Image (cartoon, rainbow, N blue to C red):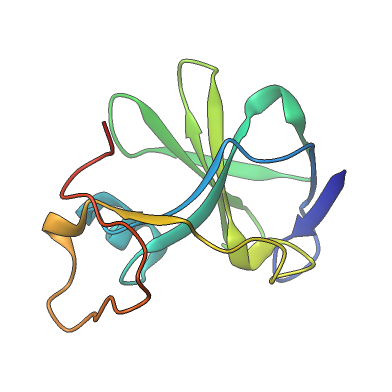
Length: 129
């Protein structure tokens, strides 16, 4: 199966082949700041399964992760692992924004206090074991 998506202005388009490795909501402080949001809901794919067309920018947000965004409109699209293994694709950037539902929350130890997690999904203080 192929899932497609893109940025707000349409300058960047992407496609993801197959099923994601996992679908999670990350509440870590880096994701909060990078996304400008209380959390980052993303589908994790092998980088080889993702094709990107258009001009993107990258920002090194940690030793291990780059944030990828549209250079035209600034839409935050991916968290790209520098070791070449995987990339998190922002769920809301898929054309079918309901294609995936998260299965767990990670880094809830850094969750913003007013965010209420009452969806019954597993919650991990940090990354899952």
